[in-house]
Image (cartoon, rainbow, N blue to C red; front, side):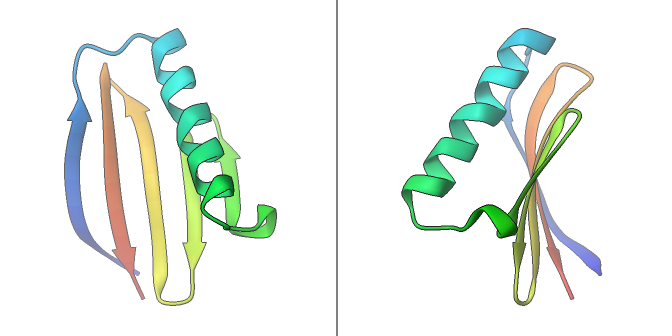
Length: 71
């Protein structure tokens, strides 16, 4: 897989706020119809597996960012 896009969504995010953002994103994905077997929660990261790649939301070094990876 190759990384296609990286975008910072919010800066100055502490660990608690980061987890809140990841949990909210997970709820939004589920409400949009994505299945549990497509969504993976890892420490500091939420991964959405798609047919042609994956989308990763991450909290790292005080930043909440998104990465899009393509096969």
